[in-house]
Amino acid sequence: MTLLLKDRAKLVKLFHKNGDCAAIALKKLRTLNDLRSGSGPMIAFILKKMIDKFEESGSFDMKCGRGRKAIALTSVEDVATALQEASSSALGTYSARGISRTLDMPVSTVRKILRNVLQCHPFKSTHVQELVPADLPKREAVALQLLARMEVENAWPWNILWTGEAHFHLQSSVSTQNCRIWTRENPFEMQPLPLHSQKVTVWCGFTAAFIVGPFFFEEIGPSGSVTCTVNGTRYESLLRNQLIPALQQRRCVDSTIFVQDGAPSHIATPVKQLLNLHFGNDRIISRHFPTAWPPRSPDLNPCDFWLWGYLKDVVYGGPIANLAELKNRITQHIQNITTETLRSVVEHAVLCFQLIGQTVDSKLNIS
Image (cartoon, rainbow, N blue to C red; front, side, top):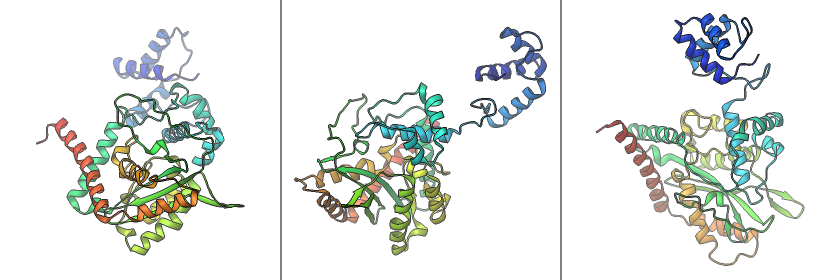
């Protein structure tokens, strides 16, 4: 019989309360669950192995069902992020097959996660970047790692390449996923958009010294360039064919620290392989890497808290006739950003990490 998580927890308690005796623990669990003597849930030898594994890993290693592999927590997080992004889009729809293509994950696994794992955590249609208690240690960890690097090398933060992408609609709007309303309560702000409104999807990255891009996600169709969806394959192609050559031209690949948020397309297998090849684990700050970018933290990435909002103000200063003009304006205004501005923005980002570090120190009463 399959043992429920709560029963496994009971067994651990009964095991330690009864002199580390597996046989007594099993007997008492059978009594509590009103099972006849000699029936389930496991033999003493298996219980001892389960407890040894629990004490070693802190996990009961629960399976989805008899004979089935457990669903990795990272897979659940990836599907949850993809679902949240889909719910915040203009169309507000998603499909298991679409998420499967984006994540390069079997559609059966995606459906299983959507059906069995995420059903207890429905996503609201409003995209709310509200921190949850589990996020705080992750923010503190990345802040302390960045500050520790600064102690060793003062110039380290100036070599960080902050990256991100955003949708710019022809009808004078930017994807609300990249525009933040700072409030303690959900404002339920709505932005009406025409169905299938014309837009461009822009990627950009910058350090304290230079800016790379903009690069547009588009493909050539019968009538010219057409904006396409960002997935792992297209994102990897942009990095390989656009970003890496641009950094190589500047001869700074070996000193650049690459930062990206946790979007599903950012942690596709080909993307991670490419990033590892050029930057190595120690110069990548991203989900699925040793230094993980904290979730729901647009306030720490200057692409989110500055770049896209700034571009919205200057790009939509007047009417725009077509997508070509929209792309030209975005390119022009990005190229007009001065080095002094970039340095100031990065200094502000570093200040955010320093404030988090001070909060940690105050918790630990460190002078």
